[in-house]
Length: 347
Length: 261
Image (tube, rainbow over all chains, first blue to last red; front, side, top):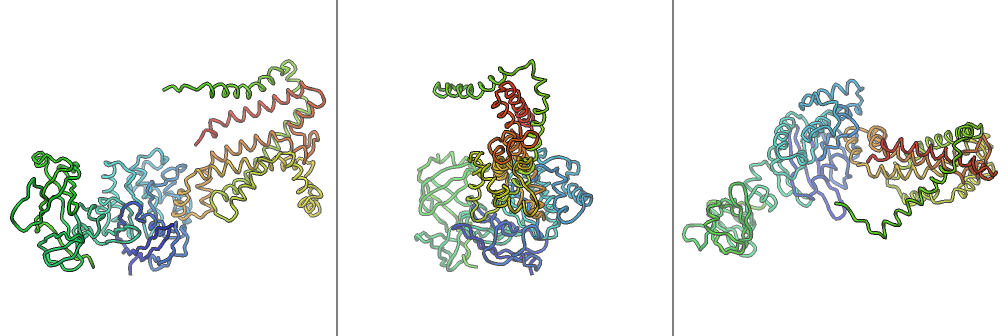
């Protein structure tokens, strides 16, 4: 039986959240999804800050539905940390242990130990406003862990940090999460955070789980446009008929994979070649398209094209210079069948 | 960039400022500086000042004890009729204080709704006592405190309270350890407003507590009585004291509390 076993149902106006969630001891799960998908509602429901309208919630075999927030064995790292501004870093971390019945000295000892573990032993006297973003994040983590939570919840733990601090903090956070013996849930809209920090991803859209699994599975076989964009793939859905998949508007893509019935076809933008004229030969997909826009994407250029299907292509600046590439320009798109992946949409 | 102020706004603004300052200048101009010290140390003046400071301070403490929880209830707990309660709280704010004094007599007077019971059960009679002054001042000043503190509570991020709950803190501990420190500047500002209002209270006090020197005659009542008896100079001296005390308190607290976010 999983440490956390929950089906979270909550309603907020017209929005309905209904997701199932299981986390094993020591496991870190990322709840990944676009803004407004219901991720934060799920986290708040787990913490008891938003009431559940249905489902179930057990943690370590104990039913938590009727338990108020302050008696749930959870720790939360909030998005903007919410460190108490009137307390020092040390008192912030000691706050939880104090409420759990330790006297001042014992609570301070626990706080000092945690501050030391996150590398802030000498910053205990500082007030939150005297801490940098990265330091505040670590104090928030120490504060949440100082109550020895069975379930640790992190809401966009790195979103408030600048890019450089983020990189360092992400690595550190990963180390601390690995040491946490309980269950950990990270809510994030950043795929990189999810991939680096979590053992398993649960992807939520419109209040529902649309896909879950480890990073390799999800990046190889996305099941929605959102996931495909996250992992940088072109994704289409249609009916498989052996080596072909026919999309709803009749457009047919060819793959070296064999698939039948409801199916996805995916390929990376780098597999898409652009030609000024219709190319010839070989088992591949070609179609005429109109250039919609061009953006810098790392060392290459990402070209968006409209046509029978919209597609993203990555090309080198040299190739772009050769073809001109102005919006509205007509081009031919070619994708080798060997570079596409086709897989069943069900299961 | 400098803003050019349109004349139709500038002229009334300056007139408004003059309108507020001129009476104060008049007061200072008529102050009998030569005999000021003698006048200040007259026993009646000292007694009235002492009584005023005492009653308005006790009233402020009383208002804090009841008003902060009331403000918390209004700001943090959803209950049916909350809007009505908030409207009721503002009634003493707009009510002419004399009417407030009469209402207090009818409720807490010896023959009043609650006063009768207080008198028969405990032998407590509030009207025309120093305690009655505190009651009258509190009645008029409490709404100021409640409104100021409720505003501060609404302005404070209630997610800190959620964070406290996730750390195992119950609502009472959260209130004392998180909410109160966060809204302390707002409470202090509310207390100053409340105190100033209590210090200046006249109508409800004279109606409910009467005008007995040494017992219920606060500074505003003393000013009124001195003026009535034809001693304009004495009234000016008393007014000057009130002015100085008010301004001193305001200036002393302004930098520390009133301008805090």
